[in-house]
Length: 165
Image (cartoon, rainbow, N blue to C red; front, side, top):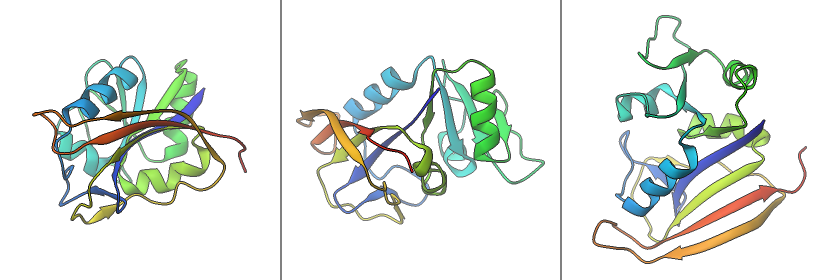
């Protein structure tokens, strides 16, 4: 099973503001849906609460240390390791880490493939993307000019880790 992460990041590394995405990028949301549909996603409790429901056509693994936390339609796991093990046991081919910052920070050493949207703007926000670590190679890149449904231009990149530590 491949462990991947998918994230949109501003030029100053912002990924969130006050519990929400700090921009609207229709092209990025469509890409996210196309890439993750039919797969498993891992997200933190705060990210789940911001979305407010399980994302359709995906197995949603929500991480929470709270033993009483419930997320109807999702699989609640108390550790990243448990989510990964369960997804693997269930035959997942590519597991997607979708945030937030704590989940990305914990998962990055395990991530083999990164679907990165570089948002071409400096954004005011309170959540930043943790370090990606080293040994990444650019696999593909596509610049997208903003449409009337997008706040900013962006670049879609796919990075592959060349060596794991």
